[in-house]
Length: 83
Picture 1: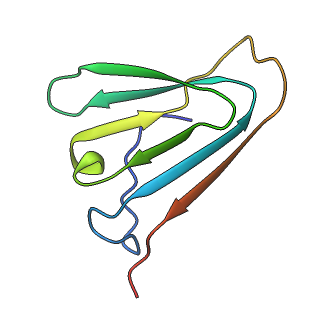
Picture 2 (picture 1 turned 90 degrees about the vertical axis):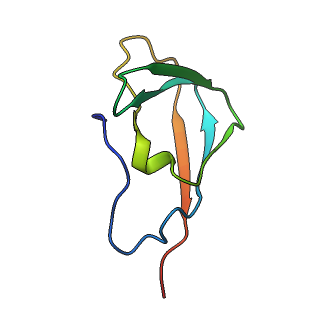
């Protein structure tokens, strides 16, 4: 998945986005929009990643391509939508 920020108009402004990972480990990356600083995380089986506050305003994120993925992976993403 390419660099992006979640900015759908239906999302609650600064609302949390929770991502729960099961299965194969995968790298997850953040890149600061202004400075270009990058932060990589390893999402292991059972990992919970929560992006909240102004994360979407200041950071891009992606699941970078990987040539060596061993096993299946399922990701569940939870978002707060405006009523």
